[in-house]
Image 1 (cartoon, one colour):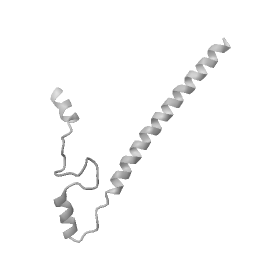
Image 2 (cartoon, rainbow, N blue to C red):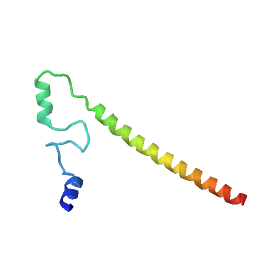
Image 3 (tube, helix red, strand yellow):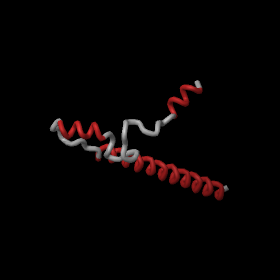
Image 4 (spheres, rainbow, N blue to C red):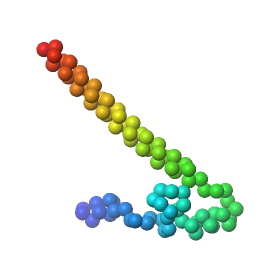
Length: 84
């Protein structure tokens, strides 16, 4: 069980060969060179970055909603206690 957990949580330092930054547009220079030579359309990495930004925004929005809900519950509880 411990081996399975360590395999699931282990993140290697370099996952896809050579990288320029962890999540930047430059992943593997040989792959980019292959795409350039094969006359295919350019690889759009902006979509991946946009997805990551969207996930971060959604996570922050969830935290704000949870904090607001907690504050509302505390406020209503305090109001109910003052009635009695």
